[in-house]
Length: 242
Image (tube, rainbow, N blue to C red; front, side):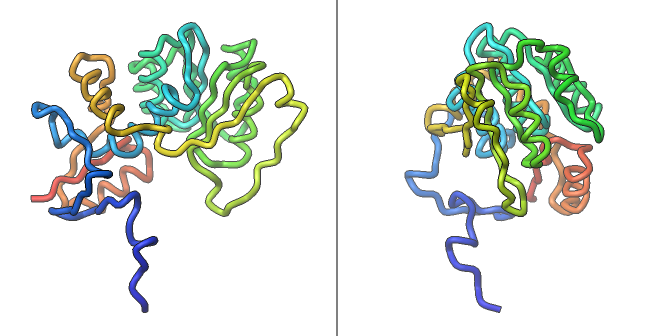
């Protein structure tokens, strides 16, 4: 079997399950000396993407409303960022009740436990005029369509992942013709050199408690960490090596 090419063997030039990594000036972020390094790993992807989606891509403004579908690491980070930015009302949707409990503690005003039925009506009960910003973290086509369905006029909808099979998303053009817009989001449109230190500073001052998403596992318990992540028991597992 041929060795994977460099384009498929790395992801954003980061290594995993290693005790050492080679960094370049483009992929190393300087952080405060007192920053707790064991907490900073999740900032590189999920946390940065969720926070950046709200602050950089969707640019949520004070007084606006926000609905997020899927409150794992990314969705919960988006909630914390939206609350910090001054969102007036935040609605969180997920299939796991314990995640919704945490969403409420981190800033969501309303939570909706999703099942097999569409959640458009449930969201609109809390946001009758629609949501100014909607973020879908699921990449599930029917859910993505529902995210578009709850947008207010001139609202912005963000997608951070696509369907696993590459399926196309049918879009009603008339639905967009009142200023609604769709944003494809990668890494929260962030400049990590500035956003990551900012999130660390906010956390140190009690405004962005991303540490509450993390649970540590010893490396020999990696199978448990994977299982707990897949079942939704743990939001952000972090492995400790050695």
